[in-house]
Image (cartoon, rainbow, N blue to C red; front, side, top):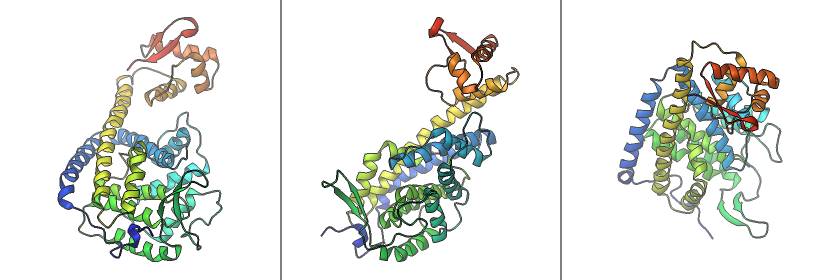
Length: 361
């Protein structure tokens, strides 16, 4: 019979090699401090727009890991509303997207509030606003074994078997007591342990992976000492999805030494911090564009489309695309574009049907 980590006599007394982790932990702490220092100099509006980009990215990738593809515009719209930012050209978010955004906002804004069963139940229910074939907003129940399985029917591979549902309430009480305890442990190390412990218990019938990453955001926010997220661990996990599942499976089949998991977590965090530097560069570039061109009169349609371009518009901007995005006639679109060309904000490229326009940075 296969032994899982939760079946070890020492469970849940995790151990790790502090000496081995000292150097990567120090490097991550240094990068974290540099990033936070840079963010605090950006100004409030730029700070919020950076949070908007990162939180949107984080939510979409956390769902993508589970094979759930969200509409980026809807997610961005909901996050923007929560942050009090304009939602130019963005559609209203549906009930499902609003739910997952609310979960993240609660985890981040109220990161220092204690974890409780009621709070986790609310988060879980928000992931399934239209109901499900199982009970939502409560610990999993029943005698059926909870397994993480892949492969075609009849050729399934069992990657992990969770504790019996009868053990979940007790195990979650132990987990929450530890998570809520202010103890002498590095907050980044704690942020690494929390999602591993949670997903190993697998307390819900579904949604455990997404909630484990929500907890990652919550405890890293505590570590950052900020009120928003400025780097996305979920995006890094998604980019390294096969590694993510492999390291989880390896640790969950091993003993209580979780040094490899924490080491991998720190490596992902370093990558996430590095990526945010690129996000900040984009947000700063957008702010600088508007500052440099604040004296140039433009209408609301033009401002809307320029913002879309600054946020990362895919493809070539043509008159017909402008008309569709701005919800105006082709004649109006052409007048808007020609006006911006004359004002030196746009450049015309190509001729005839191959004509398109680029924003001057």
